[in-house]
Image (cartoon, rainbow, N blue to C red; front, side):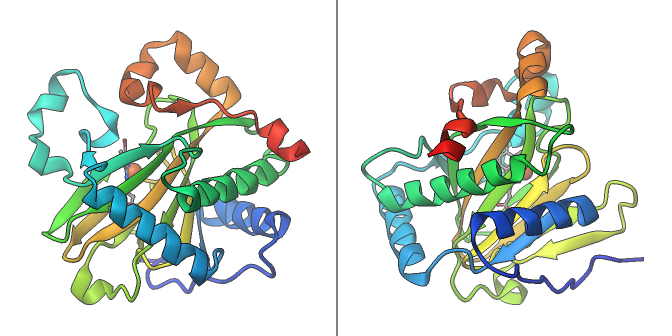
Length: 261
Ligand SMILES: Cc1cc(NC(=O)CCC(=O)O)nc(C)c1Br
Ligand SMILES: [Fe+3]
């Protein structure tokens, strides 16, 4: 059974942060992921894309780490680098003057997530995020092997991605993000990394995912949002080892401040 294949992604009623948050929480609760198209204006995204291309041509994007942020333990060495992923990445705080339009994307993600917080009461309390990861898959068949973002309770609860690829044709360009159902491996949803497409999904084991080989340069901006309790517990336990690479990219965000602004 492939309940999710070729799913038609609906659009929210309107694009104010509260309608977006309601739309996202409905699909997160229903399908564990949510696709929202058309959040940003074309004018703004064109500037974002230009900033990313100049970051790339100025050498700011470095070769990514092993999948799942594993940088230690014997299994990290079992998989050679090429077997796992070969995207190049740049971590943005979201305040750097060199990319003001990328910063606006991060601010939009923060505002949607802080609006989402009120719908997550009791389950999670999102009070922080990582830096924004600007990723580029060079179009040489580059891919990211199947993994779970947060398999061991490191605090990351929602993954938020914005794709920036104009006229992407998955049939020729590949680069599909395939999200597998945790219950039944043969069930999956294919998300084409199209321009102005946002994707939200639970970062834990509910969403094993992979990026299939891309044959055209593929850009995305990803932010992971933290649950307060899980994050504090992870700081005590060794789970932090799983994201030791992330700790120096952590932006502890006071989302209440955003709400009150
Ligand atoms: C660095 C890092 C990147 C990703 N990216 C994706 O899964 C690709 C999503 C997409 O581009 O469609 N995941 C983890 C767990 C880590 Br760590
Ligand atoms: Fe991932």
